[in-house]
Length: 223
Length: 257
Picture 1 (cartoon, rainbow over the protein chains, first blue to last red):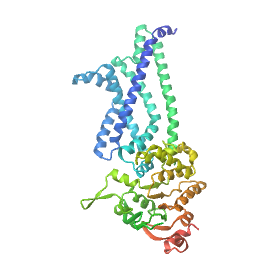
Picture 2: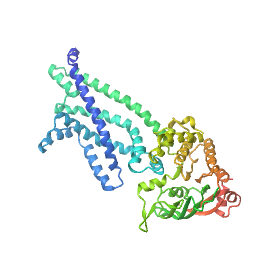
Picture 3: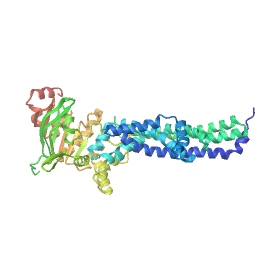
Picture 4: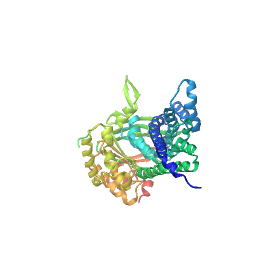
């Protein structure tokens, strides 16, 4: 067989737009999820048991639903409740809900593993409540989760391929439409795969940089 | 030095339990301004707990703590005593400097960052003033050249000296040292003890939990010997080390000869 790369080259714009959509959707939803995760981790670590229970239920509900099913729910089921969303909004909301649940859990785990001496020193120097969280706990937690967040971002990039079922023109959708129009499944999906690999490789590079920073903070804990 | 009739720190009938076990049985202790008091005793005798009760990192079960006559943990309200809110307690804690066994420097800040952090963000001092004082304090502990270095790149002894500068930056009324040299490699202990000795000589009020008997003998005005959660003996350093009054203290000191 001969590879029909000429077709791919002719349709490069579709691939580029697909890749671009995948990148910005994942990047934006990751940032929003991190922000929301930070808001969620506070009740997850609350001293009050019922506050913890409510937050835990919300986080587990988001985490324990297949991404594809969540996409169906947001795009196809919400309209029957009178809430119709265009596919871009639906995609973004789905990504954010799903990913926020993971972020909150990842942040919580990092907080729990912070040496107790850190918050203790904070309290001894007059920190309490929000200020203790903002100045002492959160910066260290954010540095510690860097590598894990990177790995989660790779998961998110791959999961975002499911968004093609609501005809959102991300990378997998682009590859699928090119292959079905020109009957070039091998070439089209190969190129999409290579682009995903490249994208994840770039994230992996950032993960390694983040790992160095996290290691420095761990060493600075002094024992 | 003018004699201040009010103790810098006073503990009255302090009791602390962990799971039914009394770690501190009934502690009475008054530390006068300018004194360096060393607390010594076997492991598990309650030394660290006693120290941590002073700034209420550990909440005592009974008894009271006074800082220059002000009760810690409770405030007067309509004739009764009301438990302090977290922010009130936090503000009282800023009057007490604390140095920990494991340093507990904040690793996401440089040496100077650690020193100026609470003066700026808790006490609300102007940044320029805090930086100038922070630099002076780093110089005092011999680490002026490490000002922009992160804790990960400091030795244990250097970390602990930064931690001492961090405590001094609060301009505290009392300094608490919780086994400040126990986590250090033996060759790094001396540099930290030297700084602590200087502070004692300056007339800082210090309460030092330590296993360094040589330091206690040289720097302490008085020594408190704690055993099984009780103060067995309080004596001037030279008396305690030359002629300990109790059999327990004699046995304890025997191990350090």
